[in-house]
Length: 182
Image (tube, rainbow, N blue to C red; front, side, top):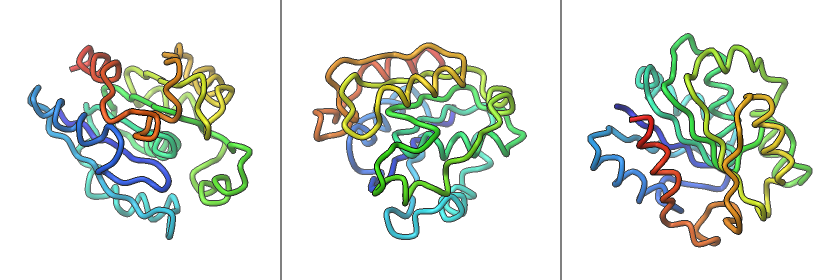
């Protein structure tokens, strides 16, 4: 099984719970990739797609895990691909503007009116994790995302943005749910 972990804006593969999750999934026999995308400089959908080209052949039947801006990035992938993904795990995700000019400006090329039916056709199951106190992505944005995907939200109390600053160097409930799909 292939798993690909996608970081968010201002992020990198070596932060938060990404290294821990990579190690835990590898213990189950998964092949895990954690690409490094340009951010915040040169952070555009096009530049991220250029990096992702090296992973495109691995998405058929794979598990995609995305944090923050990684979510609309994966939505763009699912909308354009003809390959079917086994499962997507979205953490602190959104599909539209956040109402924060700093983030909305660097995120703008990732955001659009998505073809939700095409996206849903290209993934067997979606999981959406959100916190009740995320300082960057309002709960309303996660509610919109779950509504568009037609799935329930897994609400985690007090988890902030699911990053190291919020104490998330490990993410046990995410791992537990991924193992359901392995």
